[in-house]
Image (cartoon, rainbow, N blue to C red):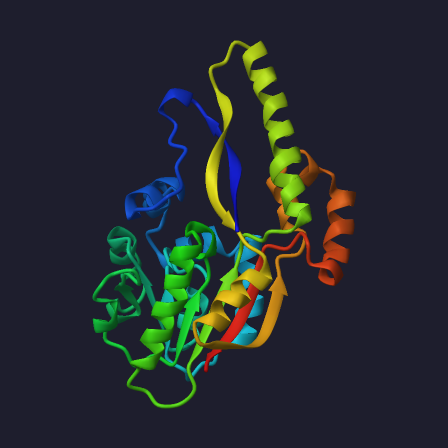
Length: 286
């Protein structure tokens, strides 16, 4: 595990919050939740905003391979439900959950309230949640928590599955979004700081107070680190799916404009898996 930073354009550097998001309010601020909710009034709005996002399409391509329509699934940390919504609309038995009550209330306008629930996996009463789930789905929590909290995520997921009232095999479908390897280390520690530094020189030269500032974005981990945590908490790895090839290059505003380079990297990345931003593990409760 290592901390990593993104570089965000800031109009008022003195009021910039550099800490990692840890509350529903902070996640809402970083994800521009209030701004997005203002644009989500109909299902057509929802599809228009999210269907054009490349990583959402990639998630759908991978999830269709691992989700089972008849298996009751709880998705944890769903936020807008952009990954789950197409499957719910298709008749999959998926319940979205999040700690952000404003998002849940808004999304219940599109689906039955039973499909969007408030749920906190870190709550001391998490096991009291009405539970007949066969699968747990986590598509975006890996980067937000340190190793101690990540272990707690897997431990609590194992406990939740053990208390399910539905008999049979139980699975945890866990996605790693923020990979740690030598390529992402170079991007984080060399490429992005250099780009931001040059932009700030230009901004300063123009007399602007706007600056690109490093924000603690979260924790990067290798695939082996996630597997080791899962195995230690009573899961067995069945298979691994990969996607989002070449996406790490999109973090660079300069390199992402070099279309030939990005095409080359995207074409070779399925073989080297160093620039991709989605790995989905199918774990089975042992």
